[in-house]
Image (cartoon, rainbow, N blue to C red; front, top):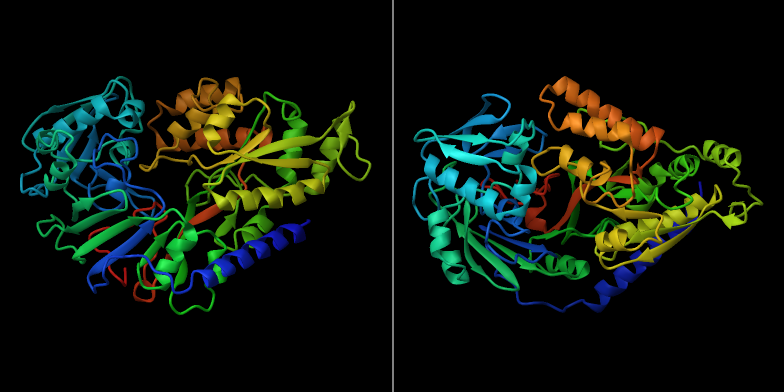
Length: 520
């Protein structure tokens, strides 16, 4: 396995990173004042609006402003949250019963009427909610009881109730009274979370403790979330004690901070995802199964996890990380088998790039700058694939989805759309990318058995049968017909200051909850 060129690139990146830190030494930004009961977070993603139907409303839950009817916990269990219970009455109807004595931050009680109003408003105005539960509706049955009805039998309803972008709960009357005015929206106290918004501008979201929170008194007096795009600037702010937690650091930061006493690189306990490599089956040479299989077998999965992402990941052994109960370990490295497949398919080697009928085995891989680790992985793949006769060219694009959709001269693409929803449902992402009618099936997958399995999965309630379907799907996608390759499983990671050294990031990116504190 050829890993030395990739290792040199990692070293160059690390040296550049060190030079940046040295050049920035002593330079500081205005930052929230440090306090024993305040948390200062840095993120590259700007909070654009407090509107729950906004396409980027996921932050409302991740930063503990809003809450959900149900919640997917870090251990993978789906449990009621604002709900006391969720019960399926029949194929299309679900009974949801609220917990008692929950209030919005403005003091109004969360009743069945308020819950139904919020859910119906999401189903009307949120593209995410409409996509997940098209044609659904919610009716009030009692003081704390509502009935959620779907157009068709849908086993993903509990997951939808735990999806950050589907059903955040809020006071519709207070929200609508703000009429889109940012100041009024901030002041209306329309959510139920442990922290309520105090201010929002293009640089920062400020939140303060909600003392009437239903689970108990939140530990922190305030939480600030500043928006800083540059990853090195985020890390420097933590080192200079201008922030407590920097989200989404590059993996090389682990090496750079080794031995430091003012900032620490830490990861979640396990991985729930990572990048996906989509293969364009419409375009030669990936219209040949033998080439797709050889590509997958040529990837050094252990090396990518150990050497390229500095140990913050795990070797990808299949489509899903082992934490999922339906995960199948069916992806491996076998360069000798890759060479045999290419030989039998007529791709001849003269010690360099293979060729067939006058065409060289050249492929173009798309990557994008918003995920610098993906470029490192792509560069390592160049070396690994060269060992079996591929020539891999890397093309960086600004909008990866637009490039995959609109350009026809790419062969594979590294992207990170996710594996399951934030509520834990696998169906939406599988259908979107692998069904012949999927909206993001940019690789042209057209597989009758896969379509049938995905259609069956969408209406199957029995957990044992669902897991069997998911395992068969993985066998098709990874081992038999190779429509995708999983390069590495990555854990969530953050850089924290000395006072927050006990903080462990959530694998589900739930950055704050009511119990969050320095020793959380």
